[in-house]
Image (cartoon, rainbow, N blue to C red; front, side, top):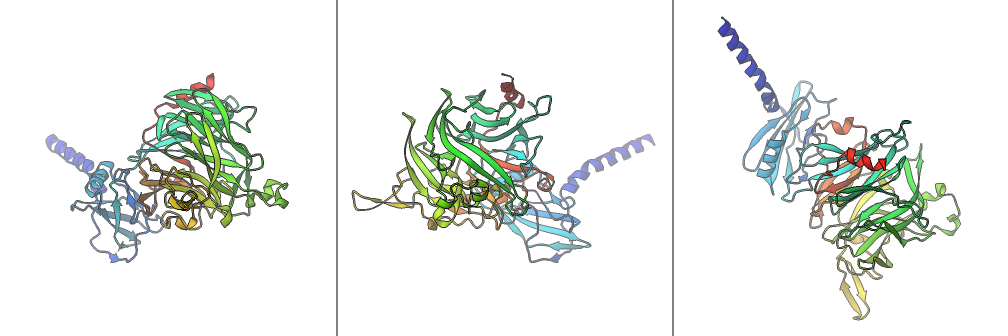
Length: 521
């Protein structure tokens, strides 16, 4: 009798152990009503192009409309598997990466069924195209409440894009004093996507810039008698231990009626160059009547690009900025740079946004030097909260400029002089599949191989900025898709915005505790 009981227990245990495996791969509904539309999944991964090393694209059907969801994925070589638990489709990492490997350069077919009340619906199938080019394995971002008006806990986190692993780079709680006064931490930045040379800012208590120089951590005060402030918005030179910064007197405004709920503007801003090795600060540009912000280097380090405001109409120049901010617009400029002398050339106008009643911010040059990315809105330089903000991409090498010595025209190379010629808005690429309609799209950046564009967008709910990617292939930009999460509901339940997303080819190896030690000195 005991033997039979033991055998029964062993059989029951085996069944229990097998249950998760069965639940992970459910059966396709035996009967369903055909629906001619694409499934209303969140995130929307229908017909997107993804990197060949991305984490599983888990998704869900709306829980208030559906009871169950089943998805069947089929690779080009005929491999097939089903997934679904409740309204969520969550794919094991090992199985997903095997499917990516089998589909590289081709597509995974996805069929979705949803149970609505007592009826199963069969939606129109879609494809997930798998690009042959990978994406950088890591990205980092600041997690912060979307209002910015109040905060207690704040962190800079890093995420492995090929998996779901997320770890902290730094948080503002570890160095809080007895009165629970902490810091605002922001503006993390890296040299050439690597983390041995990096920085982030700390404001309020224990203020300063935390700089990692060849893996060694220090805290620096960049404020000088001749600068507006310490360094604010940074850009590492691609080869030298030099960082371009804007120095800013920044203010915020919070609206109750204006649909652009938050306004960030500068009372004053200049451009400086910081030498990491000598701890010296030199002036790049300090026009006292205009605002200069958001530096970025060309990939060869020969040019520094930045945004600069245009003069206000005479009748508005002495007015309070709280009333004139909707009229402040920025154009894009650049200066040549000589690495040997650390000297800068004359200012050149690159993109005239103001002539079209627009304002440019956050420029980024592609790693091959061929394309210029930036955010464009009607006014200001903080488009993260502007509903009209979109991303623009313009080829740098397609514009011709006059050659006085030859009396004709010559093509301008990516690092050549633009002269009097401006980049023409008419040459901008079609980014219809990248930008959202009526929501803020801002903070664009390139992956290290130039095949992936990343941006922060509020398109999902107009409140929280989230990370989106899009495939860039020789001037063609595919549909943007949301950063995958292990639980697709996290994007709904996490009450934090993803601020300043930055690509990295490796993780930050310095621990939170090691970073915190610089505040004891």
